[in-house]
Image (cartoon, rainbow, N blue to C red; front, side):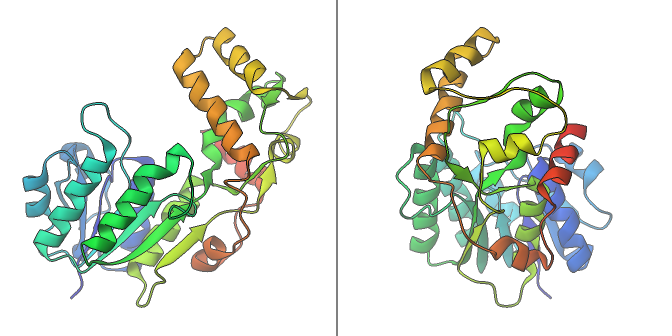
Length: 282
């Protein structure tokens, strides 16, 4: 009997992943890891075992992973309290100590060669998993459509859709599609070592044109983009991060030509206009 585990099950990604996994394997064979175990117990499918899964508590992680064969390791959110790479190392060490035989890790596009700051923790995590001698799949997720929710809502409300990414493209897909694919890889008998998961690569203008309604679509400079965000009330540091993301897309870091995501799902991805409507309803 194979036992599966999913980390971060109270987050949007982990919640979808554990629900999908319970449709693929018996719920009794699934362990759900979460920092808030009470919340996890309320949302996981019936039959799933809930255990502590705080990335900052290595001893508890090792205990929670006892008896687990295959682990879906959902990357953590960066923290000033404990660096993300240390959080990730805690998971890897615990998995090795507990005898986990396989890890599927949610990573960044072309993490082994990407030079942008967002790739660093993921590249180092991939290296640490390999160094630990653990069988693995790296699920290199491109860009969640939900990341652009504020811009999509602005356009749908008739406000300007503003971007500075130029003709750069990103492989937009819904977060739930990435999460479902992750669960399917975890349950697969013979998964690949690397998946470059992405939707069809599209520019910001193409994204804007799929939003319902009439509104201005404005291509601006990075400085103007930052200035607009700050004037709208965004924290300057976050505005700079958002601008850096635009620059990353403009540079082609997220331009991808792959069918890995739809291949694993076994169906076409949600059409862009429908996916945008789904985001707008959230």
